[in-house]
Image 1 (tube, rainbow, N blue to C red):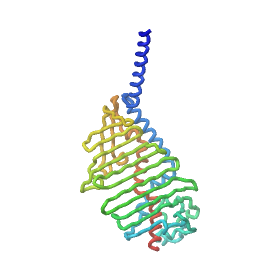
Image 2 (image 1 turned 60 degrees about the vertical axis):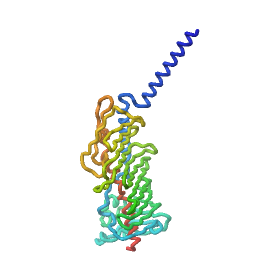
Image 3 (image 1 turned 90 degrees about the vertical axis):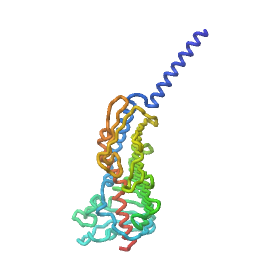
Image 4 (image 1 turned 45 degrees about the horizontal axis):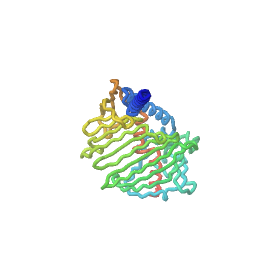
Length: 352
């Protein structure tokens, strides 16, 4: 009886050990293909997300570079709070050749007072900023189907090296919510620059960019689906005398459950669900010199997995790279919203 009990106990113990080993292998990703499978899943989720985002009208607006035609060239000091510019502004085209030289505020009528600043205008004019001040025959058929409702705004501009800027707004297209925008930028001659921007799409995706200067400069770009991180790139550089982004001290790329880290000494670490994968081999190549190396700006990453197979990140997300680049660039300065609102604000402040 004792022998039978002892054998049964040993059998149960062996079974528990097998289950425990299997569980540990799954949790730590020690399977030769676990890392490759996790990266494939992460990149597929990223590709699906970028397909969903690219189909939105908000993304089309984010891809517009209005900088050459909308950015205010004012060099004067200005202090513009929301209180000064709040109200509802409706676009109305001016049928005159001289209109191309008019202040932007001349193209809007302030219809009502409000607790926020609401700018209504034709989406077609916003998509073609060079035509914003020009009257075209087709303008008679346009409606003000784009709306930006600014709920928080502050523009304290003294110079390029000294300003504080806040902009929070909701975007509506054809009376349907398209997304929400948040920008905060502070530049101080002593402490340096801190910038953050975020756009939340109506389908649940959020894109973020952050930058903070100092002896160690940090920048980061993140894409989330609801509260789940799909993609993150983070860069830390050490200050030098020649560039805004100095000598790279650490680079981190996260796609789904896979995280890659390159440190200042050029050593690499690859993690799967926070567990180090010592047999994975990584190579990073910057194809073109750039101030902020990233997948969006000519950085290539090659991974040799534990089973000996090799792949590159650009191959895995080849269908998403261009759209990621558009999103990454747009979040640095969101032209389509910021400069229409800013320019109206400057016109009001200077009574043009």
